[in-house]
Image 1 (cartoon, rainbow, N blue to C red):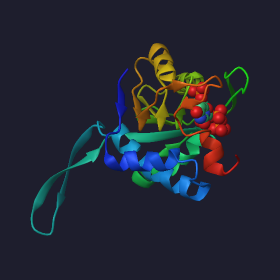
Image 2 (image 1 turned 180 degrees about the vertical axis):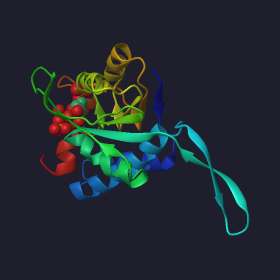
Image 3 (image 1 turned 60 degrees about the horizontal axis):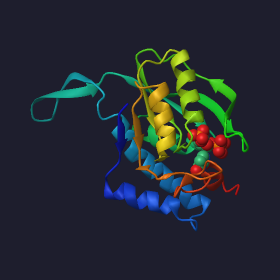
Image 4 (image 1 turned 90 degrees about the horizontal axis):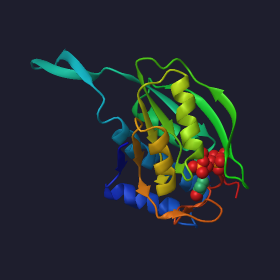
Amino acid sequence: MALTVLEHPLAGELLTRLRDRTTGPAVYRATTRRLGALLVLEATKDLATTRHDVETPLEPFEGTRIVKGLVAIPVLRAGLGLLDATTDLYPETIVGYLGMERDEETHEPRDYYAKLPPMEGRRALLLDPMLATGGSGTAAVAYTKKAGADDIVFVCIVAAPEGLARLQSDHPDVPVVAAALDRGLNAKAYIIPGLGDFGDRLYGTV
Ligand code: PRP
Ligand code: URA
């Protein structure tokens, strides 16, 4: 499975703002949306195009347009922070939802909601900012495949080596786009250095 880590200096600055413990929810949401746009651009840079000719005011032009549509699937709650970035760039995107919550003791994901649209002929962008143990991520990919998707990209902000290895082992066909690959997990399965609990920071529920 391919991992792509953003290398743009703007991605580094935005991620630093998200890591900063003093960043409050208003700036957190705006920053997530901006960083999300960079991630979604990377996750869609290989989309196939077809020829689409237009007339400029001066002469004919051999243009292009994208063949495949997108389906964005935010993993609730934290993944919602990346949804607007996707629809800003691709307004025709259709949207499905997956609800997953980690058990605080076992760190295993519990799924509590799924509403996925037909996905044939579309690229599915699974949106979840944190890939920690990989439990939620691998379950989300399994759901998405079961619902018919055959072209999936996992879009996250911070990945841990443990979660990446799990996703790679369970779903070697699914590439991952991230803003950072961090050092590892602590005893509570939080990513180190990470940024804390993404959902809590995004929604001010700390
Ligand atoms: C976070 C995050 C992922 C999951 C990652 O969600 O958004 O879904 O943890 O951890 P894992 O790789 O170990 O499964 P959380 O369970 O905190 O729910 P929330 O988004 O509702 O806050
Ligand atoms: N979920 C989060 O929000 N943060 C982590 O570090 C791990 C899982």
